[in-house]
Length: 330
Image (cartoon, rainbow, N blue to C red; front, side, top):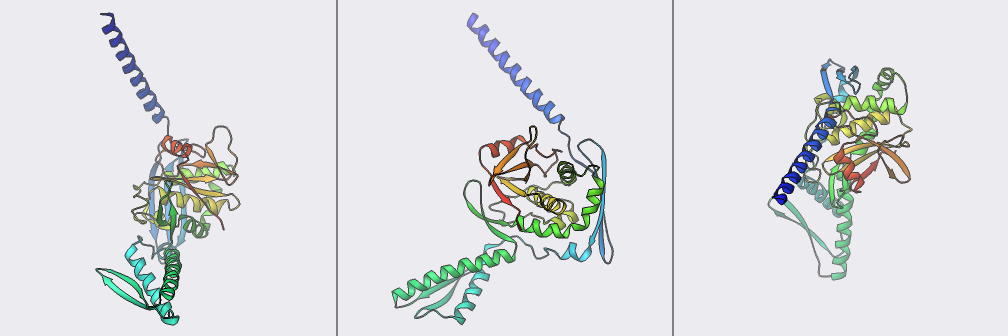
């Protein structure tokens, strides 16, 4: 009888422990302020697009933000940005190689093009094995060069995932750096809205603004080939963005506002964070990268987290070393 009583008591203890943990989790979540975009309007005339935002910040104070950008900039910048498609990239590379070889033919080697379905394959043939080997080496070199040109032209680049896999994704750093120039008309508006102009005040204002923008689910970064990514101006126009889009907008805004501060994007599987190159204070969460302390932040939302506070899942990935850093450099 005593044995069964002990088992029941243990089960009650486990149940009570589980309930207590659940209550703590719920209470913790309730104390995390949630981003709320109360109003979004946009108007365009012949020359400009005017944006108006209203949201509630981490202190539950209403914030308003209004600015105008050149209409041509909003609609033309990154207009050609599209989802990366391997078949189109291969067509570009093949045409570039054929054009190059016509100008500078391989010695004693013939280049032919064979179509297989929608794909075109380049083939080399020769009776001279040494010349053929040399031509194959040159062909591989040309493929790498023209692939790199295609990716750069279309704002993509090779990316190594946290697990070490090589993939192709949008060049978020380059897009953020270029977009920081486009967003310069916002500088005096943001700085006038922040009562105390220091790094953390300015950063938290920007974080609150971006966190309040509605969220779009991030596609798989490896397999999506850029599907769903919105460059900063398109994100502002559509008023929606996934975490990669939001971190790029945040990086562009902070780079524009504080050009001397080092800024980095931190990528984990299915998520992205921003890092500021400043020493951590109190319990702010930070990482070391190239001997520089980067304090991390969560631009995605909807949780209104200030600089130095990140989600538990993000913290676990970072502490496990399962992340990639891309710093914004000139």
